[in-house]
Length: 77
Image (cartoon, rainbow, N blue to C red; front, side, top):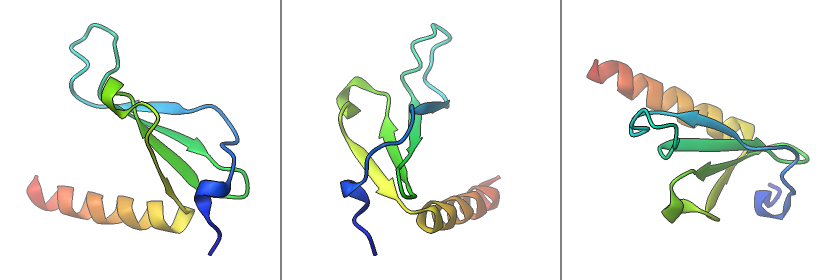
């Protein structure tokens, strides 16, 4: 499997925000997501403490994570 950390980010990061925005527009509690050249994704954290840190996942890895998380979240509802 290719080393995703060797790939360039191929576009701008999009922000997906949840709670903690305090309705003041600071968008502090956001997950940032960008595609990687050659496939895969870079995930980041919009909090100041998370600046410069990222997690990289293949399309299959992020899909498996999302399915598992949504399944668990559905059990808690």
